[in-house]
Image 1 (cartoon, rainbow, N blue to C red):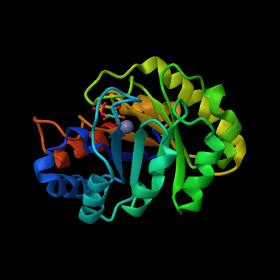
Image 2: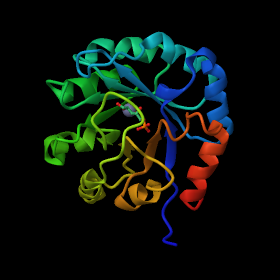
Image 3: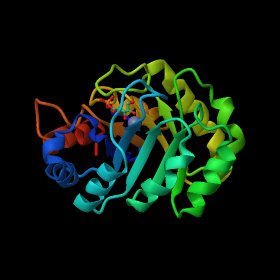
Image 4: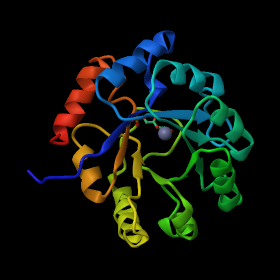
Length: 224
Ligand code: DX5
Ligand code: ZN
């Protein structure tokens, strides 16, 4: 089997049982996940609504692992401060929603957070190249954002390969995250393309298995 570098696994709580959120978060932490990915939707940038800063605070209270907030919202900068206050370490905004990415980056850094940029399936890598050196992460969407449980569109892994080649020149570890449809059967392909963080929503929170079992299956698929 091809050996791949160890990737981080970031469960998305979107399909978790919110009635026992703290327990679900702790179960994933026990299962050996590395951070949490919190999907915020505003009903405008994407048609769906999910949750806001108070849920981020509730997750913060349940785990000491890093939290990143994936903001699928319009005018993301208006919400940075609330999410930072609730304990988010990394603020991820969409290129398609941010008029001026530089302004967003600076604000996230001023608030003491890392800054990540997410690109939708139709957005080319070239769009974000000017900000790569200042960014802490790029999130490549492998689905149309809006809901969990969709099939990955693997053709967009080409963008991960392209990005990996471009960030090689930065002279530092550069996190590239893939979001959407990551499962045991395609996790290795993502890492081989150059992804270092895998978001796993329905792969971790589903009705078939516990988060611990699901994470063990993902780790074993990755050969860890
Ligand atoms: C979708 C979100 C994803 C999603 C991942 O808009 O950004 O993070 O919840 O869920 P799965 O892993 O089920 O595709
Ligand atoms: Zn997400």
